Image (cartoon, rainbow, N blue to C red; front, side):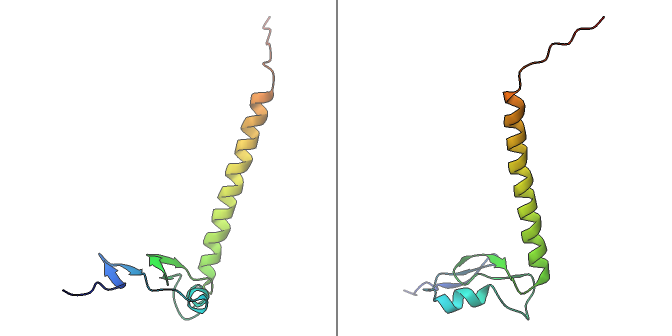
Length: 90
């Protein structure tokens, strides 16, 4: 019987289940000569390359959306705490 490979691609998506080292994990997030997405050093798929400026735009956009969502939740809680207003029309 053949032994299963711990690295490779399945339907074009890379995977790697080899035991990671700290140096290899850190170097996978900083690859200056690569594109915005690089193969993960452990797991399935791709990760952001922090050496690419486009990755920082994605991180800032995600943080802005998360902040906006959290602010929206606090606004909804404030509106629920308000008492109903009676309107009189002449």
